[in-house]
Image 1 (cartoon, rainbow, N blue to C red):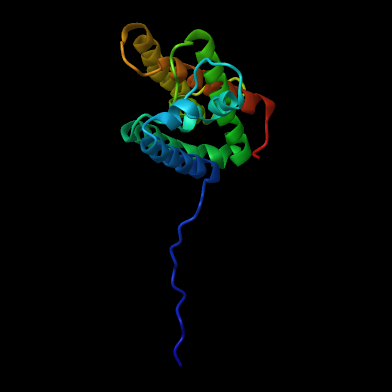
Image 2 (cartoon, rainbow, N blue to C red):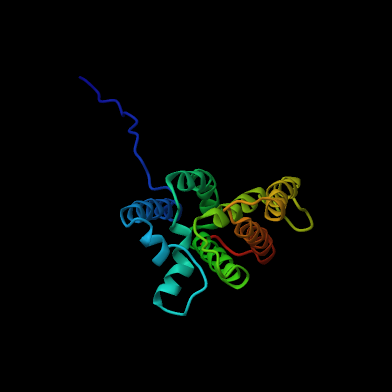
Length: 197
C-alpha cells in the first residue's frame, strides 16, 4: 500500500499589506506619470504651494507616491520594501499607515511654508522615517540604543551637510523631517506603550 508523503508547498504571501500596496501604487503612479508626460505628478503627485482645492488635499497625501524616474522609484522602494515589513510586523498595519500619513503631511506642509516654489515628490522622507524607526529597535525606558544615535548622526548629519553645501535637486529637508518624525514615533510608541494595531 502506497502512502502519500506530505510535500511542502511554497506559496507567496502578501505579508505586509500596507508596504506592498504602497509600493504597487507608487509603481502605477510612475507609469501613469510617464504616459501623461509629467502631468500626473504635477497635478496630483507632487506638493507645492497653491490655492486650497480638492487637488491640493490629494497632493498633500499622495505626493509620496510620485517619483520623477524609475531610478528615483527604485532607490526609494529598495529601502522601503526592506524596512517596511519589519516595522509593519512590529507596530501593525494601521499604526504604520498612520506614521506614513503623518510624516507625509508634516513634510508637505513644512515644504509649502518654507519652500513655496519647490515641488516635493517621492517617498524619501518616509524612508528616512523608517530608517530611524528601525534603528531605534530595543529602545526602552532610560536607554537609547547606540545604533539609533549612529544612524541619526550618519544619515541626518549628512543630510544637514548636503542641505547647506550641496547644490542638487534632492530635498534634504524632507529627509531631515522624515528622520525627526521617525525618532518622535519611536519615543512616543515606547513611552506611551501604544499597542500593535
